[in-house]
Length: 375
Image (cartoon, rainbow, N blue to C red; front, side, top):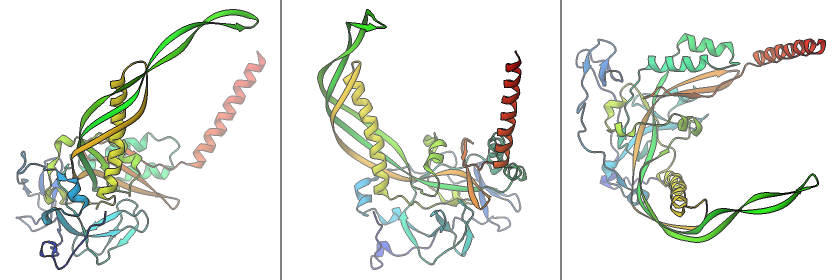
């Protein structure tokens, strides 16, 4: 799906770009969201400012109609414009603040220069605020890196130096749907027959498993709530999947204050493509439900016909601490769940350490073989 923009439509008139910057009441410096205190804080003078609505939701997190989103027929208040450019190396959709024209891509450390265009997209509906500070996330990454075998010495030095990590809000889609499925299949019941076989010239009786199949049909239904789909293409999906689970029950209605001091990535996976992924997940779960409903010892599923109703979605932001490390011209990335501290990442291997380990292994094997031969 491509978002459309009609400059002649007053509902689609350009709006100022959200800067996500909040001046300190005391000194005028920028406030940032403090994950530890769950409030805005000033690093310059130490002033703190409570979040509006902290501890309760100002308004409920309302789902949006999927068909309206696919038709680009959402209310103008559900859309926003941000200055976004694509990283030439990893294709991350990097969001820029007003007045900033160059930065380093947080996903691969490549220098990025912003273009002059605006990206019009669906606004986030909810955000899962950072719960861990950068120091806590860095400690989690150090522990993870410290446990890697055959890592280059430079990687361990990188961990010890405590390089700055980037706090990134990563975009996701969530989808809800009511489903009712009718199916046709077969239920298999295992039984055993006694057969005579010849083994090593001797005849003996064995029990052989057989399956008796009977036709089966029925209906199953399930409500899918918050099927989560990554809307970013800049991080390997295996990393972000490994950061799960996310405590989506702690989602807060979107407020730009949560982004103060952090970066946000624009979604690169369209609403339509995201729903295709969500539907694959739903179909797998429905097939599992069907097999359970068929029962028996074995199941065959011939056909499943599913009706989906009340399909809704929302765009959400989830918190990730990220660090990029370059080794021999290649970038390696480490990501930390900004709520739980779970770490995933790429890692280089030291050829020298592996070679030394192989040599010592061969020497040890030779010594063991020598003493075994003397006995």
